[in-house]
Amino acid sequence: MALVFGRCLLGSQTPLIQTLRFRTRKPNLRKPAIPHWDRAIVLRMTEPFYAAKTSQEHPANNCKKKRSTLQNVEKKINPFEQILAQEFLEKIRNAKVVAVFHKNPMSAEDLFAIRLQLHKIKLECLHFNNSIARLAFSGSEFDALLKLYESDTLTVVGEAPVAKLLKLEKKLVGLVLLAGVVEGRLMSLADMKRYAALPSLDGARGQLLSILSAPAQKLSQNMTSHQRELSSALERYISDQTPSPQAEEK
Image (cartoon, rainbow, N blue to C red; front, side, top):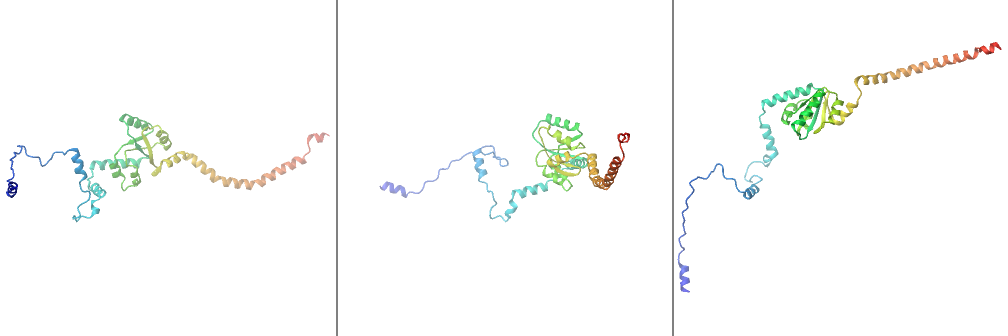
């Protein structure tokens, strides 16, 4: 018992010190090693989503949507894209018929076959990205078309009639007609179908003339009806008063 008590009264032993030699290669502080997959997931999940409360920055400034909008505004515009946008806008303005298609994924051979079919009816196929479309249509009379350029689109311009375009649209596999511009007026697919069902200009003029001349024809018929009835009554009276040849012989 005395031996145990004596050991407890002894002072603490000196710590054990072991000298380790560092590697000759220094750690790379600029480009640290990629952590393990599990460790990377834990580090990513433990990152703070919101700024610290001690920060003086307003929470509205930390909105990701606002930051992305500011980055897009500050993004410099490529001069070559401006040239392409101007050419695109000029072709849209000079074309009588403009059709916007949604392009599904397809091979280059299928796209070439579609271009060939459109070229046969005097239609040109234009394929620009959405950034060029925004540069071309922003602030112009075709600003409403920007709602269609959200995904991969294909623009067709030319002078072909709308009826031919709608007839060919059924054969274009991989393209979906969204809307178009006909004679400077934005039209949906239903509007384009109704426009294609209208008669030609000469036929519409003939219908208009027949409608305008109908009241005059009816008025002339009403005014001459009494004269015709009187002349027909006189003819019947004369025929009744004139004796027949058989009665004279008797």
